[in-house]
Image (cartoon, rainbow, N blue to C red):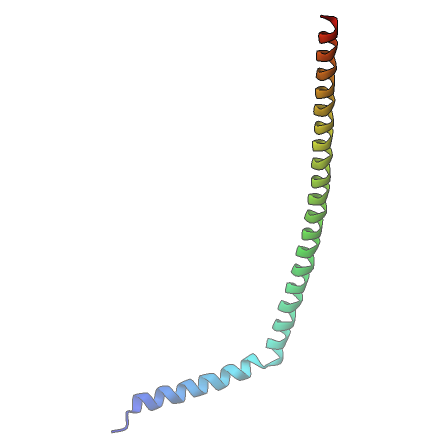
Length: 94
């Protein structure tokens, strides 16, 4: 009536689980967790430095692009004014 296989599997699972908890809470495991956490924090700092550099460069690029567009607009406006002046001069000479 009692299935020995099921009881054995339950006992083995309980034993394995208990051993796993002891292993996960050991001082060696704590050292591994600490080293891993330190590595993750270093990686985070490095990533944040890179992100800051990229943001700074993107800001510089945006400002340069705005300056280029303003210069083009001023040049186009000057050409329109020059063309209008030439047209007006041509009309008065006729």
